[in-house]
Length: 236
Picture 1 (cartoon, rainbow, N blue to C red):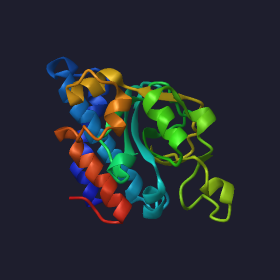
Picture 2 (picture 1 turned 180 degrees about the vertical axis):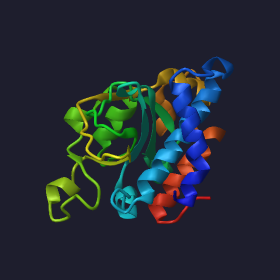
Picture 3 (picture 1 turned 90 degrees about the vertical axis):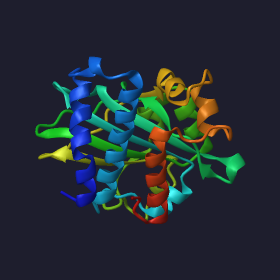
Picture 4 (picture 1 turned 45 degrees about the horizontal axis):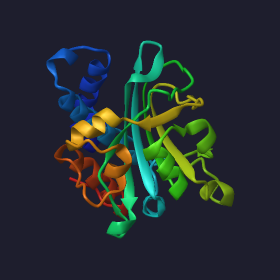
């Protein structure tokens, strides 16, 4: 395994057990949120570590928002309680800097079942203001809003429609078989989680694009890793 991923491997396993309900009673809600952030950090590392799925730095630079999602197998399905998703938006009032990470609920996202898989790690680039708004303010429909599902190896670089799509998805499939297909599904803001993480009564849109919020201590690392990926560097 890539040395960078070893740092997160045990955390990923812990999150998977927590998703199944093991030991969840011993953790506070905020503890569980911290684990979800680490799970998404792991998902970003997995996607970026493989040449066939790594997101080019230039595409991250051009994106207006990024969703990082990790789903693990829970019984015979992906998603549900096993899903963690984080959205990070650019804040125009701060010179398009990346803002405070916020949680999304990926409970409506499901992948076609394929034998041998144990996890799906996904990076979704949002390339329009409308796509970002849908992600932080309401129900973001992957079936209707995502126009392409491809990695840099499989994407046709001469296909201008694909490369200009408002949403692009890069997915790394864990396990022996890499044949999953994304079914129609949705992601929505995880309001309770965001209010707890930022100790505020404000909603997800205000947190995601406000100049008043800095990343919560637990969310600093994942934001830094996005910045590092954008620059082509590796966050420590």
